[in-house]
Image (tube, rainbow, N blue to C red; front, side, top):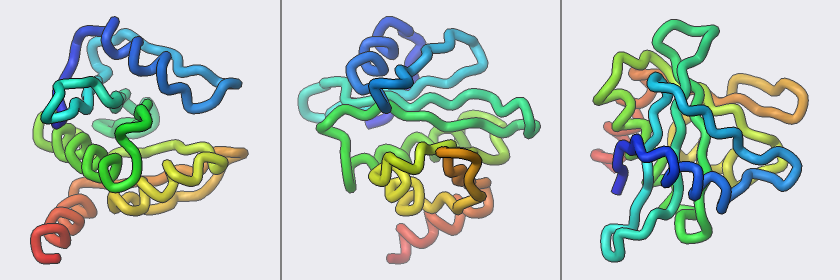
Length: 147
């Protein structure tokens, strides 16, 4: 279950517990325009991970997507969580598109991006960028309903 969260202590606990790499810890930005969505376990209420959507300075109404997921939110569950998070952002904001910059070494995260319907945009250094807009997401949702 996805839940919009403004309790930044809760977000920080999740980000600190699930670093992307030991070399580059998550930097938590507390800014009213950043949207934090917590993935919780429906049965236990346990926090499993956090999605962060920050405004993209290069694209009007665009957002950058970041995640810190615990071990209980991997694979198909992570794909489902990502779809829920993207859906929440498009349903509750005027976002026109989302870019997910992902380190190429985190193959699982790249697979989740593709499985969620994001399209590769290219690489810059060790980062691969994936993109989805409202039109692409509508096709993804239609595919999940029809498939």
